[in-house]
Image (cartoon, rainbow, N blue to C red; front, side, top):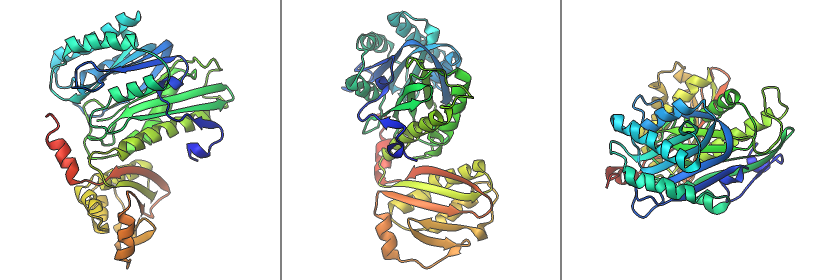
Length: 409
């Protein structure tokens, strides 16, 4: 059931982070990037439980390491910069991240251990700390609530993104009315295993950290970890959620009547933000929704989906509007997951293009009309089990190469 169809929650149009009670936000120009907002602060007026998922890349930026260290603390603030990833910057990079936390804490009169830090941008370049420190002070002074701070914070975390990515919902639970909101950034260097993406969610629901972590990890696995643009997993990928309980209702626990609905809404918000990332993929002309059904298990199906959506040959075939189903089957075959190729059926849009691992007649004219659309669906029926997964990806165009061939300039 989509958010629009569910009368138990309401989508708050043109709203983001500060739609949740007890949260303030800002986004300012700190001079890290030329002429663009590049530093955001999200502030919780009361202590919040934090949960997070992070890149699986063994090369991890200093902010990722700091967030992991602070995750079990009561959290009050998050400071985010764009334009510099603070990755592969050695001991100085960690000192700079710690200073970002300390400067934010001092400006807000909270403890440094209550601050999360996140960065995104160019790898291997030292942080311009003089600008960052001045920017933090400016951002804290600019904290506020409403549509303008929502948009400003979403803009400040962008790199090659072309649009802001935010979502906000109000939901009635048996425990009381709560809000769940979030912002995200990502356009390229996007691949499952924390596809470069950042996502920050907040809720005014009251929920303890262990349960929040469990729910968030599951939601992220079915959303942020099920998207790919180019097959690259970043050094900085981070998704965090803060729950401050400012709504004032009863605590959500494993035995709560409202837990299933909260879990469903959390997935909906994560899915919406993840799809916004895919739809803003660098240079894309197609958004591909891939469904694999009747697989042996979800884990294997997810690996197979990633193999198909990351295949350069599959991606370029979709860019060329060529129904080359053989490339899809080949990508399944080298995914490293056992299946029977002679059972596989493949559909592109409403038309079957392969049956039992072999070709079936289809109209190239009709297929061309399907492939000319921006949104294209692919269904793969493995016929070996009952597991099913959905993943999202893009084609790969000449424009993607142009964007990434001169990224640092």
